Image (tube, rainbow, N blue to C red; front, side, top):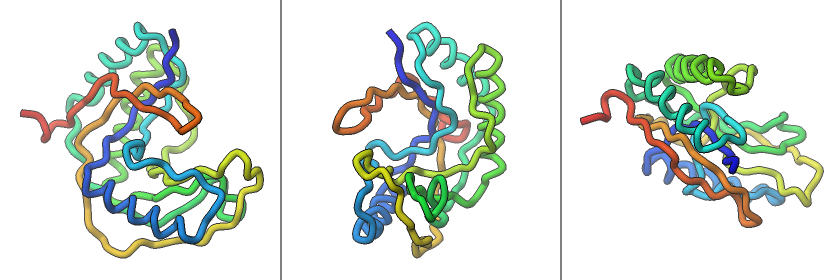
Length: 188
């Protein structure tokens, strides 16, 4: 059986609450979007596609080794953006500020390890962001969205990465943790 899978940072509860507040503000202005549920908010490192349980085991071992020397990463919420652009928004997201170089290093190192076992890794530049909402399929035309800069400049520590599996349902995706990786300063 094939399992959709991805590698992503776990967001701390305080950051999740902050993001939900941003979603509530944006929801008042933008209809036609399906908002990501609190329990599904994350920072994707790599989308891995469909994998067998055996492949996921190999991926878990490689990620454990690749992440062994990394420490928690400090981030700050940035401004909102849209894919493909603000004039034809299909996806709304929140940018991150802070130690982006370290996030990119984690992305590069895990990507290199995963490519080594034949995983297809997206070659586009890594743009750390948290997806807030996606345009509903019934609303084929993307709409224009304004930039939103949330108030506050509190930083948050990202100290966990999960290897997730995902099952698509009519109500939205259901994520399950396949393996958890604690970054160095969060280990006992």
